Length: 79
Image (cartoon, rainbow, N blue to C red; front, side, top):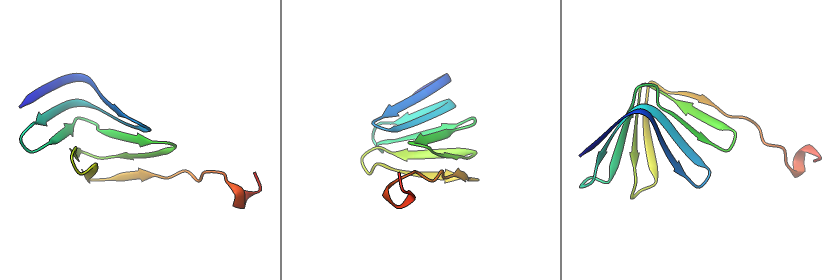
């Protein structure tokens, strides 16, 4: 296990996860973010009290979730 404290930041392609603390479990290939975890991908944001990121599955589980989805302009919007 590896514990990181302070301004923790994981960047991967368009995704960024920040938190106050992160605990990495190598054998389980997961990172548990606590302390105001926030994930951003493009213009979309999700936050919660705890975020578990499964590295090998590229998937997250968020507890006590708050999601903000921003509509992206595209061909249907006439842009």
